Length: 137
Image 1 (tube, helix red, strand yellow):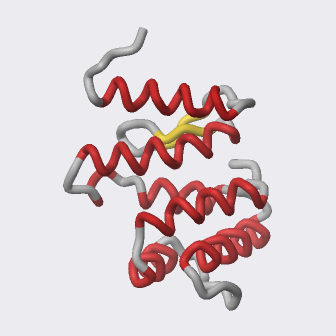
Image 2 (tube, one colour; image 1 turned 30 degrees about the vertical axis):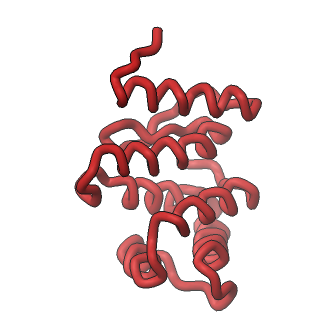
């Protein structure tokens, strides 16, 4: 079971996803993930935030929020590895504070929680460097 995400993390996730999807795609993906639309919020970030928050309150855990993120980071959705890695690393910068990271196959895995911004950015940079062939020890 995934522990519930706090409002800061939900807001960050919602903000990132709102830059990835149109209003129509948000509706499609929420519906496909079994997450109801909220009556709150009109902009993309707020629509996502309230829908995810309400589902998490209903479930008393973050399982469906994480499943929604995993659904969006399915490599089959992408035509470009660069675009996939950009979205994945951006979301991972926020998820790593919760001890979660999405791997290159689009699946979540447990990791040590980041405690600082520099630590989260550093981990994200290592992923980007590995993807682009720079190599990190």
